[in-house]
Length: 390
View 1 (tube, rainbow, N blue to C red):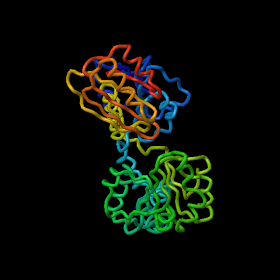
View 2 (cartoon, rainbow, N blue to C red; view 1 turned 180 degrees about the vertical axis):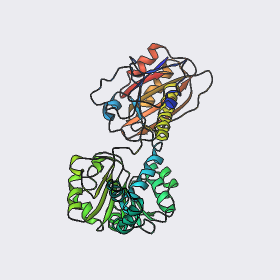
View 3 (spheres, one colour; view 1 turned 135 degrees about the vertical axis):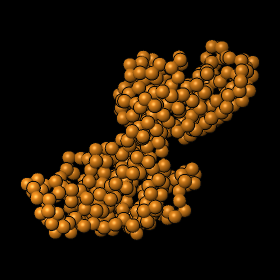
View 4 (tube, rainbow, N blue to C red; view 1 turned 60 degrees about the vertical axis):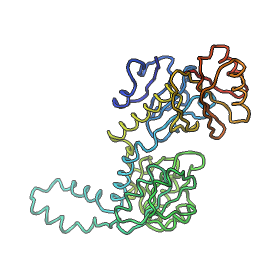
């Protein structure tokens, strides 16, 4: 029986992916094999010795102590793309709100509570509507920083709306490149994109390399009146620098999903309460994807969409036993483990090995189930982190 401890409210559709006859799932599960969470911060949360994996139902994993988990051989999953459509639609809403006089116009209409004559109100609004005139996004240029699952969908949406699209992503994967429309103009550096865009939308993860990516220098490189949209992470933008740029008139509008006290009441800021992925469909998609990845890892040792271990998958051969182990990515480890199996007369049927950065992962199908002596010998191999038998 596998045990999964949940944090936050997880969609029922996701929880239903765990077969009841072989899984215990709940918020108070002891000795869990896996964590399933949304926004719960795991920094400081005790890591049970039983923990094999943690799945974040969402794209960002800055609420998970990834380095600590990696040292323990705990695989951390996320769900890239599962909430992409929800964020994409909110980016479009943000661009329209920043371009048309929608919000001030609505506020003005709702301020006319003392009026009782509909004809008089209609005449007044006809007179005053020019105060809320805006522009159109068709023909404007959108610069997208980060061309992954969300960024590529934002690009398609903008192209469909008649916009010109520039993109910058120094870490663009092959899969993401295939998804990207050939109508997107790839920029070689961030500065070139900032200088040409009317709107800039950020879609990069929060990490040391992206902290304050948009700072005073970046803001100075933008065209006057540029609209900056941040539905990625708050740390990507230096909010103090943004407020200064708004004050001096260089930045036109700042649309974000991460309000701060200093932004409140600023008419050039459109701030939302972190609702980028907060749709029923998005939460269901993320939960289902996270649950499926946990099931495949717990039952087969396969890894997809991990943020710390390589993607690795191998079909099961009937009648075999599966051994998986993680290790430091140094030479000779796999060879030593295979020598152990050979010395113990354990016949290998199939195997696969993948590495990522400082970590490696191995799946080995053997003819007979290894005994405790064999497993202890594998665990004793230098640089082996964690061993499982499935």
